[in-house]
Image (cartoon, rainbow, N blue to C red; front, side, top):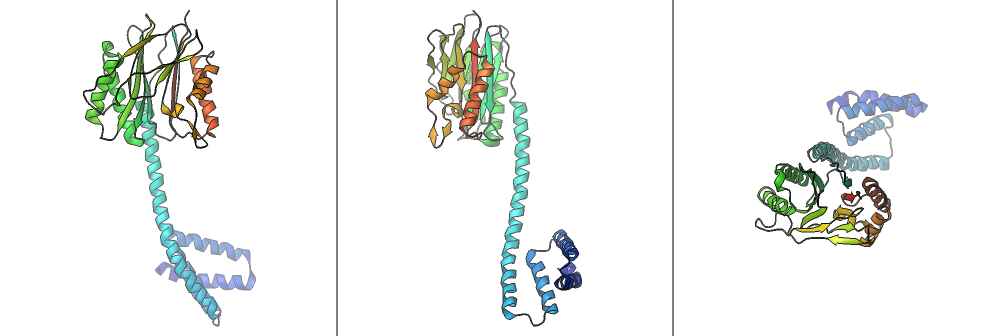
Length: 337
């Protein structure tokens, strides 16, 4: 307040000049006074008090009701100043947190990065987009020395940074498996033990894992409580649900997972997804599962990446370009004769 008192005379002179001349140049000097007050952390009520004291000296017989109104304003601005300071502190913390989340999101993108494998008999497309900065969905590809393709699609029950690091742990666990350990049943049972030992209680993971044998064209799969996936048959033009029973990862350490298989014929489509696709919500309602599949079917003649891009754009438009949930879709098409 001492610095403000030293400027009191200057402020009074500025006010006196303005009352006499209404000169805009004086208003500019008043703006500079305001900026100086901010730099000195002078609160709004203190500035109003300075104005009030200067006004009393310039107009000694000021009306009593005007004096009372200034007292009312000063008390109001005291509360305003305190609330504004709290707001600024919260805003600074929010900016800091947003920056930290941005760093974590970049780390997640780096840690969870996976390459789409190339295969002569299999065309693969994938789209994974988070609803917010951190992605609770996860997909990963594995290719063994024989060219067989393993694919995982997962969803963490729990979001944010803990979910991201949970997925990172799962990815590194998967990459540690040897070439002869990529069959779905073994993968899920191994990951279930990893999640159970290392993830906090209350955080679970759903996962669908499949292995495509490029020689026999069999698709082996198992599920840990994940969304059913599908095969669009070229011969019939109909979808066939592929699902297997199994608990979410991390629920019970000794659980055994069911492994099933299905033959993949030329131009059949394997469709793997998360609930952000099948539970897309628009205008308070969930999109019917048939609508999702019909959009995929309508673009089935395209290459796999084009299919997933068209599906994503369709649902993005439905939601006015504001995703309500993480979106992950993988399409694999057997394209040999």
